[in-house]
Length: 149
Image (cartoon, rainbow, N blue to C red):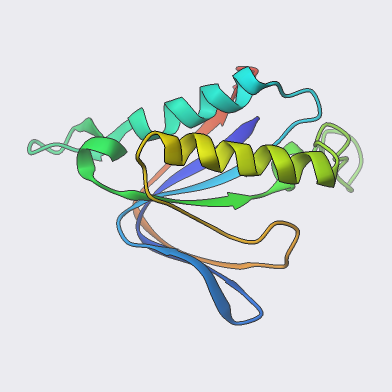
């Protein structure tokens, strides 16, 4: 599983001008399920995200987690995180899980986040979404359960 985590002041997702998810301060998590991901991969990302110490303490240092800051997560499925553009100009998405599997696994990922007591909003799987993000920092972290980066 791969994720791009952004610290935000606020964010929301719209599908056909309808808001499907909206948060105030917290994290936007763009997440992609890989074709070879296991339960352990989903758990690793889901447990890592709320504990990332990327919020400022009183001294302005990264010492506070989302959980400690009391923020929320906006989780957005984004298979293009598995785009491989090393060859040619058109990315290959062969490493991304097929849509039916990715949908089910992404839903599991969201439930793993919620089971930790974190408020989670989402976009809509396989929809054309408009994602509005007001970054805080900006702070952006890349996560890969296979630890390729």
